[in-house]
Image: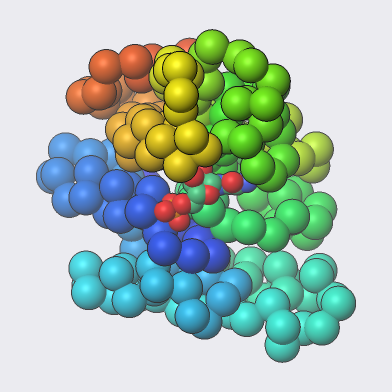
Length: 212
Ligand code: GAR
């Protein structure tokens, strides 16, 4: 049975698109049934709708500073849709315990660095500044501490001489698009191909059923 999966986005949604594309395969173990954005102008919403997926904005500005109320509204919609797994894909809001606790063990995030290196923002610029030779992306379970939950998979890329921040972002993003569908599939219950060189799955943790 395919796991009913929702994706939370804030922007262009290219990782969302990669998940939607992978989930079209009849053998893929997750079904993308809902896309939510905290920003009504997120271009990913239109992409999701064009793919025939229900997509809705829950604008954080409607809730003022009450982050918990915003997340409670998201949680209501997720539950109403019988969601089993939530994938954050470029969802650029720090989560409060409201969503984290409600979805602990069932919420994944993709982060553009090889965690635990470079949590937070500006990861590509910081990797260049630090002079590291290896960079990449990580899919992990979301816990209360930002970018620190159990790692489900990582994909590495080299940093090449003369790389700009944009060069690096594009190289990592290609890996993100391969890694996230593979990590979600492994989590949802089956192994799935990793078409791109450089990607590997570490510590795949299975989905363990609803917590409530
Ligand atoms: C991706 O690179 C993702 O890893 C990153 O935002 C981008 C979203 O792109 N996420 C974070 O930085 C989370 N802290 P997308 O909207 O095209 O998927």
